[in-house]
Image (tube, rainbow, N blue to C red; front, side):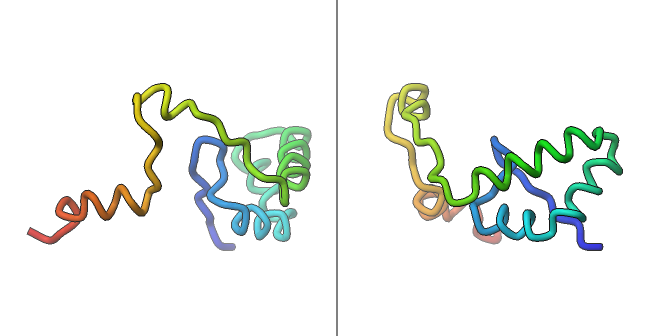
Length: 88
């Protein structure tokens, strides 16, 4: 069995990964049960994933409100901080 770590504020890293997890639904559901979640929770979570595939994500302006500037795309942030990733 392959272990997949899904991270992010909502537990999702892009729709393609979520779609694949839904396709592997039985394995994902069983993993929730194996780590101690009830079967009802596992079923509800799988249903939530299935219901949200294909729907655009909710976009808010919270980052801008908190930081006082527009949000930055991750790729832009990495490009701007490239020196931090360079071998020393």
